[in-house]
Image (tube, rainbow, N blue to C red):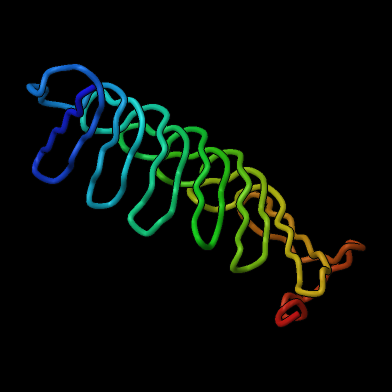
Length: 160
């Protein structure tokens, strides 16, 4: 097995296997290293299309479908502050999905549009274990409610 390396001046493509070093574009299973991310998958050109795993410069990861170099289709993104598993469109949460926000201790699930929950439910878990929920309908979040479905003021949940 030999390793083929292609460079376009900014990006580097690595692949293993027999073949010519005369390729002008990445082809086959390999790894593309850009200044912003490392893409692993099957290539047919410099722009990722298909099923890939990606490690971004800051350590975030994505495993799923990519079209024209962007997250499109089903995939899972794991960041230090949140995890989103669901549908994507042009790098935005769009379609059905579940987002766990570690910083705010919330889980939101439902239909997303342009990176925002459009229709669904958000659950907030306070430090004492109490759970609060809020529904989102047509992009508008309704008031937060406790486990008995009683409306509460959001400031009551702060600092718990």
